Image (cartoon, rainbow, N blue to C red; front, side, top):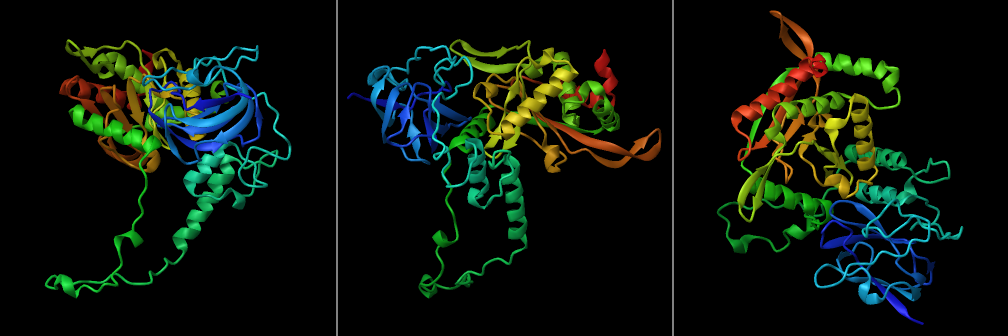
Length: 447
């Protein structure tokens, strides 16, 4: 009986490693081509890896939680029908990439090898063996990942799903309740209090029983999204000369428009928020100052500024996995309703941990909505490959002078950071002023 070995493939992101999140099979399980074997987390997304073989699971070679390099062997399948071991799931570094299996009409292909649609398992799971890790707990992989990120034990969560499964809201509600109780609980007093050592004291006078740093500190391994974010932000901060500008805006009429759109039957099935008007304003302003949408590119013949006559508008999203920046492709072609639908899809997908690598690639300009955290303004770091990023602060009522009188108005702050190699002061100031003018008078969008 032949044994095939499956190696961790490059899932189309050009990455070098991934974390094993959850095995979906166990030794002795029978699998068919395209049955999901394992869920992995790369620097950008959660990915399910399907089997390129039909056979019986032999050895699992990488433990859950382990970080594995692309090309490393992760599982063996005995008696497998499929491509030879040397051609399956190899890395780019001197080895062959995985071959796409024959299509049997189901339309599913291997993730990362030219997928044409969603990968689905055709293997039926035994009723007594659901894809869960805790007995009696039913939850989808993204929900399990969310629970791990929030420190929630799924066994303690009351499920509310129609089939008795734990939902995202169940996990978030449990985490919030736990947070409240943690905040009101009395902190545990350490066994030994920290000692105050006089400046003049000699080293010999320090008692040997003084607490060590190990007992009071925790080391967190930098990997996944956090590692990718750190590398990208460091590169951007030390490569592009950042300059920031900002202005306060009377957004009262924007809030009135949001209220009208919420009451409109044409927008009854989509979520409406000030971010929709803000995004529309950014697209409008980019058309008036196209250099904001350009990019500085290093080539073999020297540097060039690459103009882009399309807008892939990124929205920075704080998710349980970390900061992601998915973007809406060709946002300049969307009307108000289309933009609202795209924003809603982007938000829900990011929240559920289903943002794909393709959703995060090719962005041309980014919005970060720091207002949801109650912040007024900031100096954000530019997303690599772009020349600008704009921040929308919280919208709150403040005293504002209107026609010589002080009145309560809805006020926000628009701030942004720009690559000074590409954009001069007049360009970035004009862009921020244009966005502000739309927030003050959304009717300008009708021109």
